[in-house]
Image (cartoon, rainbow, N blue to C red; front, top):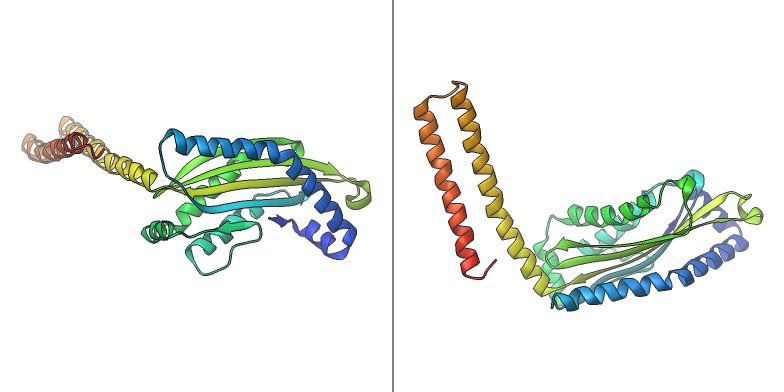
Length: 260
């Protein structure tokens, strides 16, 4: 994925540094195999249990090294931003990332125009949340965590982060360096897109009912405090109650038709 500035400088200067980083990266990848296999099982079970189809969209395997003094979430955000640009724009995918745009996936992306920041934000939220759950930079030790989350329009993120810390008197003056291994996949499902659309449609009318009900409650408060007349309350509340009834009927009709 990336290297903090300090480690990047070291790696550029000496072959030994690069060899050492490659060595500990291979070691962590070996340790992470169990967790990657577990993620794949959860991924497959998710689509099987929900009877969803699935298409490959994004897959990534990235390592990130940093010294304790350089610990931050900047590298995580940088890779997510780079992936987002590759998905929604014309830039190429970063190293370690594969992007497959099947026809169905391309159509889903087109429908998500102007949602680039939202999708990138959701991915960063998931990955950074996992990293932060490991604790501060002063307490990093071997750890692993998994999370999956729907991104909308039939896209679903599955992610595992594995981390460990290392000390090397020869290479890093016995200062701790941290390595994070990010394993993640984004799948696309037509059936999940339909389910999400139903949920969003349902939420739309439910939110309307909540909003209009709050309006009626506010009107009652104003009436109680003599800020409006009974006639004003009656005419305004009648409008909102009509809107509430209409939204409720729409929900009932959608449920009866099996749409939601």
